[in-house]
Length: 429
Image (spheres, rainbow, N blue to C red):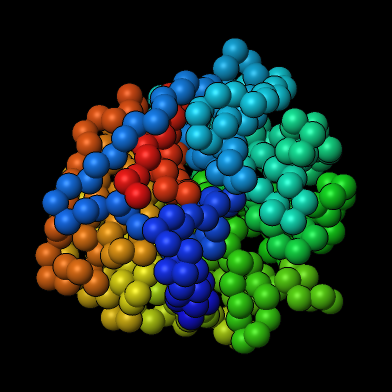
């Protein structure tokens, strides 16, 4: 949390110096800091939320979320037996380039719930150091694209073919589910870290320049259905945390100890549906899932393992919890606000459905993209500590499930639905 507060404080200071126009890129899943917190204003003017629709564009279907970097928007989708990696001009919505390759609509081992998703669910990862873009298809195609050369492919491997990855096992007393690869890769230094779920390792790090394997985790647990690994620091050591198919895994990333297990924590959810990713704040993590678990838990991680700090009988099914200024927020059925220190429910309200994602803005508001394409603006607990307070809402802005994560970059909100419709809304200055 200290790092996030410093980041926001620095950006706010720059805004004050530079004037009213302030923005930042959205290069990773959940934003620049992978935290769903931005140093930009929501645009609320004390009486209304005057959003202007700049453009609306149709891209191929899928739950892959948009990234926004250097004036360009990157996403991916599926159409006519091919995956498409698409680059748009972020200001106009015009297509800049597109790359495609053969890919099935569902992963080769996919089982169950085909009516609820289609095409890629993984969000691309952008390396701000090199301009390389990394994508992962539902069928395990891991690709590296050079955005400085109109998407020229640099390298690619297929995880199923390379590591002989088996179908996810059945867990608990529920039915079998396998949604293919869903998680976003993670850049850390010269590595691209992917939850592969192979016998060689649950997590595998690749050289981001060449695609060659650098190391693998000691744990070879099957992959979860989450949105990807998350970096954290444990007692000064760089680590990576992931919610795999049967619980938490935290592994080291320091030289000489790459992949060594730091902590595990059992968390078995019906259908192996550990979907919401790990949320990290300093040495603490949040785990949550619906179904049989139907709860959220806070753990402290040390080099000796994981310690349970609290549990609360409230859950997020898909939305990764957002930790901001001592509170926890997520959108599932309702919008929830919890006290991060104690786990106490502060308030809940609104109607969100199963799909949902949130962004905390610098002026104390929460942008919520949820349900069948509803966009709402809600007061954070900093401004409304006792009750849910909705300031504005745009209903059915999209045409289908709001599975893709909403993005906020340089004064614009980018909403995408499962069918591949992207809506760009300009915030007032």
